[in-house]
Image 1: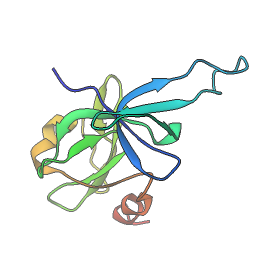
Image 2: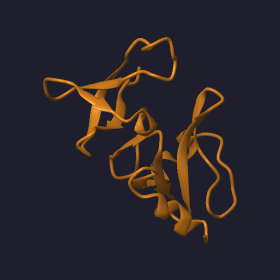
Image 3: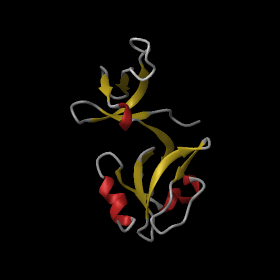
Length: 130
């Protein structure tokens, strides 16, 4: 069984990993909610930007770093791809070399997390030749 964890960026700019709680809608709008992460290793809670929230895939890269939805990874050929959740599975969106991958499980031992789409979007753009 895998650990269920989420990562999100707090208003302070700090990345927080822990349990995710989404508040009930405010003023009748489904989009008007607060997202909170309760860190695993410390007390308290953080309000996080919902656009930055990503789930832990349950896998680690070749260096032992946890892989989260929204991470940018590269393979041994220096091609980069973005981790996405699609059709009930975590996948690598189109590699910069043009290939697609069905599941990150296939690449787990060969990929390395090099950043994420929120802090390092240019990593993906640069690898895609843009």
